[in-house]
Image (cartoon, rainbow, N blue to C red; front, side, top):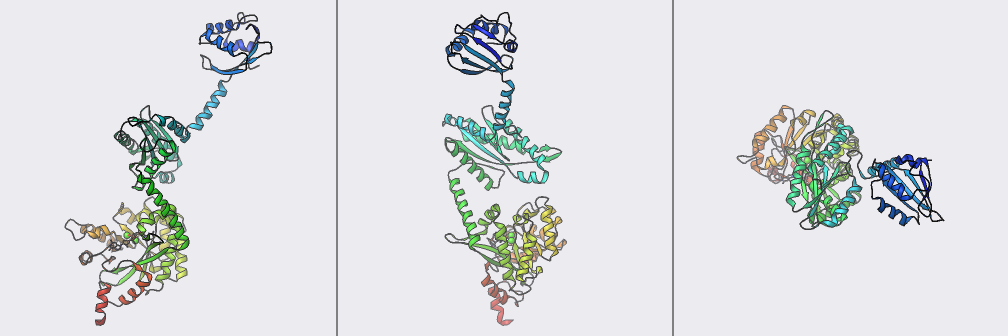
Length: 554
Ligand code: C2E
Ligand code: CA
Ligand code: CA
């Protein structure tokens, strides 16, 4: 029998006990024998060290309850767990069984641990985090606030994808260790899942204390990690909500911390934000915009405008850039600067981009043969791997020669060692499509991108054109870019040219082409065709108005 067993009569005298019971506690058969009292047994156990409580108090408690079945788990001084069950008998006595449940208990504890702790980092998981937070929330007060910090590792997915899951896992473990080192005993850290962590800071008297913690967190996680031979650097977006001021029930405070993190991400990541009530409205507005965007893709709420690009030497229109416009039923025209990022985040840019491409190719096929079409392509469109096919389909359907199509990409396409994107660019180049590097000078502007792919054109961002005429302006930067481009057989287009002076300076610096309000803003397709036809035979013209004036002389 695995259980220790004792039978007592109605006068609490031992009737019988088995050997297993004596063995379990190392008791003497001389003392624990038929006829001895329940109290004698417990006193002997106290003497021999397997019972540490108060003998009389324990005896009184057990005797009080012997009339009904009762069970308890006791812990012995040597650390075992024993389940004791007292079962009443009809004659007023009782049977006691003692069972060693140590292993069973340990297994249960392991399971409970697994249910409450994250296996990778051993931090409390979301469930336990919620439980702990729920316990803390009732104790908050104005002078004893509680801060919930949501911490989201920036670009974790790309680390995971480029360096592998092993390194990704190591990084998460290292982050867990760093975070734990940042907090006090009374705070707690949890891993909510994936690359999301959370900290609850308790006993906070003001936002300064939270900001201090945030700085400690940044110091800790921004330090480069040594992960399986790789130097990995990381950063995070942190959203913070305070109880009671931002809410004192669990759902509210979690939602607000989440909104604040969302705001930190929207602010460009690598930063933190405290919750503010207007964030709620902003996120709601964005969700509405996202829904409208989906609907507009189904209903066709978009148009393509075209902005001409001029040769700076002879004033010829060399091409037009397709720029999408969204005519919102209630809000009127919405700028692509406002909806393209949402379309990119939701993946809707794939459908939208394909539509722009087909529409613009069909339009450009009706233009004079020497006018090119430029189409903006988002980095997201490179991810599906079918971009080259879609481009070929659009060219095929419209009959536009591949050599007349130019795709404008930003360096974000090449930012990671993305061989897949590079392969697509080479495919496009192989079918005769030209590739331009857009917005040059605004991002990392690493010259290595120019080495990685032989671009046909560099587009110099408007910010360098705006101040080109000023004494401390960007003329020297533009000149440098023009020289680099020339050395690698690329042309340059200056964006956002608004004044004659800018145009003259750009021409003098050797820039090849210009685009901007000086000549024409983006216009609907129906307006651009007459412009192209009217302007085409005009030599060295600077603006459509002037070209019209000169027309009689030509
Ligand atoms: P971008 O490719 O850099 O386009 C140039 C932007 O500058 C356009 O803004 C254009 O209207 C504006 N612009 C042109 N000349 C001037 C000027 O002289 N002065 C000023 N102040 N602005 C000028 P738009 O049309 O609002 O487009 C904004 C951005 O949205 C584009 O920047 C591009 O990144 C994106 N975008 C537009 N259409 C598409 C599209 O079909 N697909 C993708 N992926 N992105 C698009
Ligand atoms: Ca562009
Ligand atoms: Ca641009």
